[in-house]
Length: 128
Ligand SMILES: *[C@@H]1O[C@H](CO)[C@@H](O)[C@H](O)[C@H]1NC(C)=O
Ligand SMILES: *[C@@H]1O[C@H](CO)[C@@H](O)[C@H](O)[C@H]1NC(C)=O
Image (cartoon, rainbow, N blue to C red):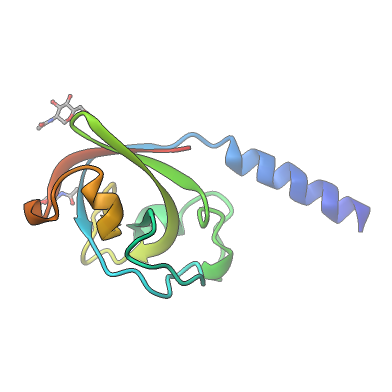
């Protein structure tokens, strides 16, 4: 019991110290709902869907997407001079997001550009 607790603390410290930055992706919007992390989100929340390759290969990721260690972590997404911090709640399928691309809630997207822009090219995101 005590060993398990110590191990979990050590593991979470290890993953939270994992630095990750992706450059050159695109950002689009999506309609949040029940995400792969197992939590329900709304369009009003500052949430993000991370490309499947990145989230599925994140250190500690297993077969259960609800337990993915990237879930609940914050990303700082930057487009030109603007940034927004968003919480990881969803997986963006490879068919929609290449590595480094994200889907943002409409509210998060609006922090970077008007919704009418549609797709933002050459974003950078960093795991906080
Ligand atoms: C970004 O979108 C363009 C098309 O608008 C596409 O050609 C490019 O591959 C996309 N890049 C990424 C990383 O998804
Ligand atoms: C992409 O953005 C970076 C800054 O994050 C910039 O240095 C680079 O020139 C940009 N590339 C293009 C093709 O706009």
